[in-house]
Length: 437
Ligand SMILES: *Cc1c(COP(=O)(O)O)cnc(C)c1O
Image 1: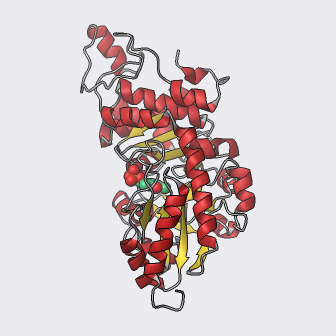
Image 2: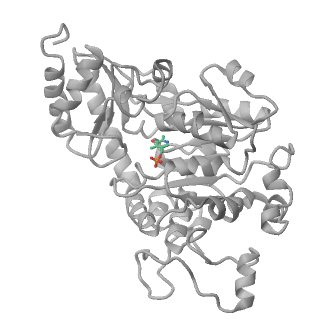
Image 3: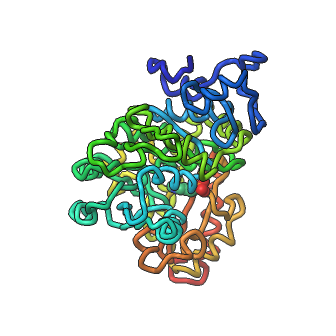
């Protein structure tokens, strides 16, 4: 038995133990890296049972691997889900999350406050599948309701939205989605399950870029889709992939055969099998190592971020700071409700002097790394408008909280005084000779 079925254990215990046991072959205590593509069948009958889903086991690493399985079970336990499937990246997780739900001509409604890469993926790449995205400001409940129609199959948001430190009202959005008979999908990358557990607020599916805080050391790409197991796919007839006989799986009706595990098994048996975005075993191993210290790291990420945000808020060259952990944040009440332990460690601030000052700022830091990632042990800085959000229109950039004057930080685990000193000297250089200096 894995720890997944032991809800009595607390988060700190689950992040170390859930899903793992001493290796049955060797007794190895740490989860081994099963760097193998394939697995020997006991006999022809065993092989047939595996292919029929009558017995669970390993066939081929594209659809299942013991190291990846431990990661799936661990994230599933931390989120409080029913099933989880890992994949190659956060972007792959977004495809994987929607694939069982969407046909050509269907649409999904998404928050405008998203990671820039997600906006691009939804707007452009998904068109090739015939999937339409409808972006709405999720603060405007009437607009969310108006965007949903008979072909809408999901509502999509981020818990703590990248890059701005905005916190979504998950409960309100889940209620709107459920009224319309569609699931709410929450990208919980920035919060991690340590800070926010979307299933407790009505979300149906949670996804992650495990590349970020879950791994935490910037070594390994990965994604994860977790299902609450609670959404009734059969209620509307709008999810035929899950509720009608599957032609490419000898007529299996996933909903009838697997109930609350239908979505998870579809993601393995169809999505991973046919789209092939599996996670590499060594990446799962690195991510498992990261997750062992998730709660400790997130506490430090949050306390460091708060100190840096307070410093910036009082700096004369700074126009505003968006960190939701600040007492002055418009999202302070939501932070208290959805992520009381902390507001994670990415946020943006506006530099007086606009685009040019921002570019000088990222060129002047010495301890911060100028790069496109977040959730690393190292502190990171990026000017979103000239990088991650470059392909967006001006309007989309402003809607996503990535206007020309915006610098995004991902605060790491270093000494906060050193981070503050680095930003202080960089701001002085960035605004030298301007009115803000
Ligand atoms: C990074 C990120 C993604 C994409 O994940 P990759 O692992 O880079 O593919 C999706 N959503 C959010 C919130 C992210 O930060």
